[in-house]
Length: 512
Ligand SMILES: *[C@@H]1O[C@H](CO)[C@@H](O)[C@H](O)[C@H]1NC(C)=O
Image: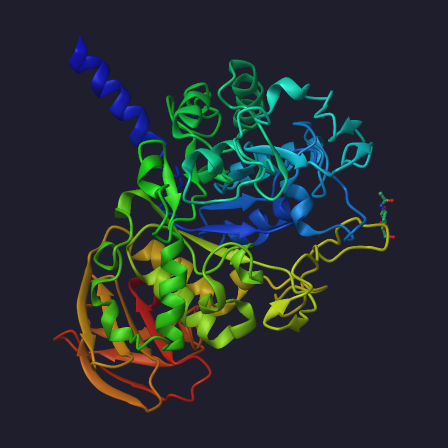
């Protein structure tokens, strides 16, 4: 009997680590601040045809609406209730999007903000995305409902009520993060309200959650909430599938709270990954690409089966959160394509691709004064649609990194090589490296200031392959470089350091 229970618990734990992606698809894209109507269309016209496994959506619940500053992106991280109307659209539009994405095999993962409600200075009134009345000062959110009894004000032991010292785990969990009203998740009532919200989304068909601010919640409280979650909707998922959980914990080392405390509950965001890879590609701190031979756990990252990896996220691409200036973003597009390409070629972790909007940066003493600016919007504050240009790029300030040929083709690469080992490593002891994925794919990088000109063993069957970075296979034609692999598996690579994209990738399905 005891053995039986242990096995059952272990099984549940593991299940929450599985993204449940369909048809051999492996990568997730974060369509940051996109409207539900645009995500639905993107699933059908672009994500499914190009093998994307899922979308992380912005928080779908009711949030505060702010004038000072004007409609910042972070207003969506200040919940007012669990009603499903947000800057991205209505409950009906959300439901339509989830259905349409599921129907083409693209999963939806919800950014769940459950640690807190709005800031303590959020005022009172109906300045909320569904128009619900609230009073932040009195801790009154009647449309949940939550009252002052449902917050940690009494439990927090700092004078200011704010987190003052990240060396004290109790403060980090029980006090306010940047003034955000901290929910008392130890209460059955609060756990129930949060679980009801998440279960409503599960029943609508979402595949899981990115859980915001997990460092600021006790693992035991999260276990209690996750334990109440329904299995996924059997219209689209196998019976008994548990929701995929990936938890935002910023652990760069040096604090008492570690990622490890959350491993049994689901995956965890590995913030060391983008910070370190950014340092490597920027060649800062004496780092070289050749040192990434043992990339992954060998670099002190969390276990492979616990990690959710990314080059940048919506916080650190604008200087919030972790990583600082080493983080590479779309603003450094040449390096960015290489770093994202490296991530997608490498087997470590579940990979998430970022898709951003542009804003006017204004640096004063190294800090962007405009780091708050929200998505492209009309004068009345409503988010603009994402228009698709004739060349398939996006307009109106939407960057659509996931549509860049190099990134889109590396998402396909990751699917083609799925399950194959990291193999056939080569490096020049500097910043030229190559590695394969069994006999299904091979990638070569030149991040040195001189040309790469070398013959390498690729592990691939002989034949002519189309490089999916400089172009791609279209019918029987290759629009980019062609790579000839001999019957001995060897191929010659030449990559100029001045190429627009100084890397080359071939895979089994790019064979001509
Ligand atoms: C905001 O303005 C846009 C463009 O003029 C319009 O399409 C939209 O319906 C408006 N939304 C609201 C809520 O008034």
